[in-house]
Length: 303
Image 1 (spheres, rainbow, N blue to C red):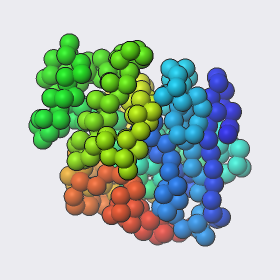
Image 2: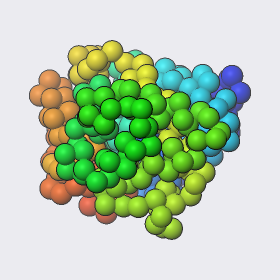
Image 3: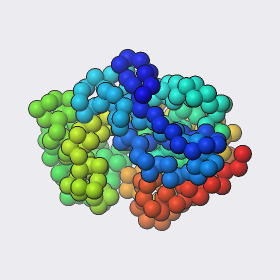
């Protein structure tokens, strides 16, 4: 547990030996899992897992207290990565990031370009406003029944997909009120699961845990209501800051949560980036097909 100030202590752990690699999990707010080690050959890499503020085994937890959202911004997470790097005496990392973790990896690389040796990104997300509009609005054209349930929880917001920013803000408010927080979290996570054909009632899923749903939804809406504290298309416009860093991006063509447009545009302006397009709708780094491609990419890196 590393004390990073303002009451936050982040959980970090390691396995393996060799080149230093850091796993940046998705969400934001999902936490790391032991399966993330499988993305690397532990005879070649020393892999660090870091639970981001407010989730996983870090404290305080957003499921327990709204104080977990204080001093919890993208800039704080970037500072935490630096604190972990210094703590372990790492000169430069190989970064893996999935979904929101890919956003955080790129934001860190653009802030600390000399501290990244290479990146492997999967289910690539830029967290641009247009991509949030897609995930919580436009993709409703393919999931109208799930979207109707999603909108029902915030009846004061017009269900028109263009009202996505207002809908996120309305959910954020409900999630901060103890009287409505769990119902709002359940509805939010039902949408997150539903677009992948899953259910929050699946006992084998982390979304089956009400506390996980509450913490996850609170952190996601906290970040997305603020646009992750980015200017529009910030990561794309600042690719030049990380243009020298080799990167493999792995993305499913029909990923319902993150349009292929995002990594495609990045690859077109990032000289050292390679985009590998998979079929299907796989998004999670720990799905079998995605995991195998990520592992092949980390195996292929030469140092």
